[in-house]
Amino acid sequence: MMEFEIAWEFAAALGLGVLIGLERQQKRGESETFAGVRTFSLVSLLGAISVYASEMSGLSWLVVPVFLAVLAVVITAYQVTAKNGDIGATTEVSVLITFFVGCICAWGHVAIAGAISVLCNVVAVTQGLVAQPGQSHRTLGCRSDTQVCHHHADRVAAGAKYKLWPRGARIYQSLQDMVDGGANCRT
Image (cartoon, rainbow, N blue to C red; front, side, top):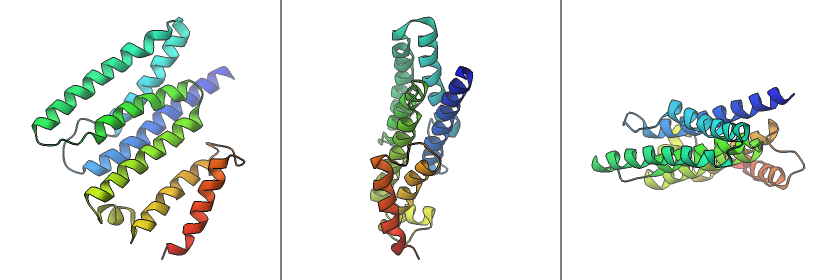
């Protein structure tokens, strides 16, 4: 049973990395950034591997140098993109969050990691609404800001459907209320 749990944690880390990476890659379109789906997936997996290696070796500090290595890559990538005129740091911060999402999965808290991943996507898309009004509407097939918000509430509520958190949890009921309340605005 232990091997199944470890496999689940690694698979969850990989899947959540894909989730965050898909949003960031979709956001960037044709422009070149340093991170896409594969990079986010690997960074999340690296977080899970570093936690697993630290637990197996008894070296609890092992996660720190791995994180510092990821941080060095992110800082370097930001310097390169900033030279080219792109001063936004959403992708870079998302990479760091993704590393910790992988760590949280390996620590056995997949539901929390899933919630963080979805919230990371919601924040990134919301930032896109402010920066480029209308773009997220077209991408998601929504006609208003309210519909975009309900689209993301549906995503989070889907986490409850796939048992990322229990039905009795307050977050499930709050999200279900949001989704049920938003059913009227869809056309």
